[in-house]
Image 1 (cartoon, rainbow, N blue to C red):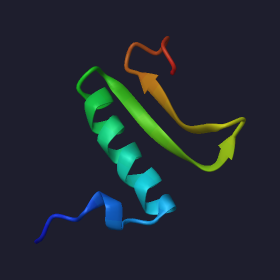
Image 2 (image 1 turned 120 degrees about the vertical axis):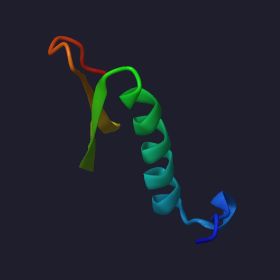
Image 3 (image 1 turned 45 degrees about the vertical axis):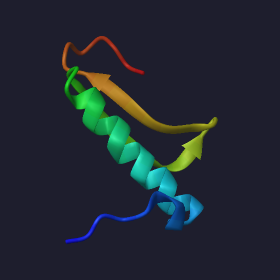
Image 4 (image 1 turned 60 degrees about the vertical axis):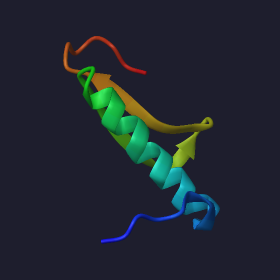
Length: 56
């Protein structure tokens, strides 16, 4: 496998790449991230905490 160059990605690919990076970090803090298929009020994804109370 070979690393990719972020600058070579198109805008949609960069959005997906960024989501994956953020979701990996949030997972360490107990969040499950869900990518929304269609931006809802400018939101790209939701993150639900394992405590069942916190959503970002």
